[in-house]
Amino acid sequence: MRGLGFAEHGDRSRVAFVDIPEPQPGPGEVRIRVRAAAFNRLDRHVLTGIPGVPIERPHVLGSDAAGEVDLVGLGVTEVRPGDPVLVNPGLWDGTCESCLAHEESMCRSYRILGEHTQGSATEFVVVPERNVRPVPTGWTFGQAAAVPLVFQTAWRAIRTIGMTRPGTTVAIVGAGGGVASAAVQVAKSLGATVAVTTRSEAKGDAARSLGADAVLATGPDRPLDRVLWEWSGKRGVDVIFDSVGRETIPRSVKALARGGRVVVIGATTGPIAEVDLRTLFWRQGSIRGSTMGNAREFDEVLAELAAGRLRPVIDREFGFEQGPEAFARLDAPDLFGKVVLRGP
Picture: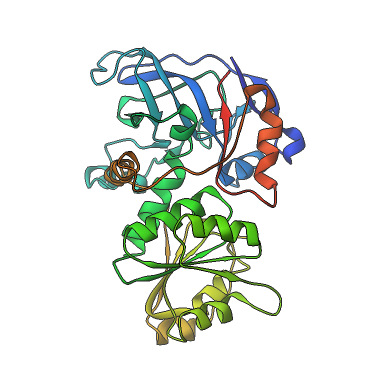
């Protein structure tokens, strides 16, 4: 079976088509013929290599998938061959303390499709039946593939971990990626006042089209903390959504309101950051991590999407044979939204 991935870790020059065995569904599992897959920043880290995470090689990239059920294993009752479905890329064991408490993304054995397993940029994907949901009526497979990872990540981070409510001020650090475009929409849907920071006028305009109340330009003479402090009327910001990491976390902490939360969902510029603890304790702020979402949150955000209150944002769709070009698009300075790869 052919897929887009790599045989050896490295930079994007390593991305090519590889062959892996065709998967077969076991009990309680379904096989999906992939009609569309989508990439995330996570794929860059998988390509480079993640310390402590063994990655089978050759390896297929991609965590998001949508397509048609192709085969079902024993005991599958909710779907049948031909059903159009999308995939929740979070995988859990269902038996640990966290799973029994319905906090699946905190499972001791939690894995993500395409990181800990072979990915979705290929012909077939096998997942547990509990990981598939119907494609919303009227959606294309490309739209369905653009949703799962980024929207559940944004929903949990903004709503659950960030405790966003009507009247909350929320700042999204960076405007280009799929999670950021989802986070703007989620925060607005919860009644927040939302600012996005960016150095790109085009990305700022795109963020406004999603509902952002303010687009704040940052730069050498306009550091993040000063920009957010001014925007908040020197009150500070309630929730700061930060996936940048080392370069921005210290300044995000400085811009917090009393009782504010910096919610961290990634560390693009590096995993180690130094913060001023005096600011943190004096303002009674917190830095909280968030990863993916639990099964309930996944269904909640899908319901919002199916109702049209949120919408998938696609930067560009590519044909399967354009796979390497599609992956390279992740590094484009004007990227906004998800990069989708149509199935073979």
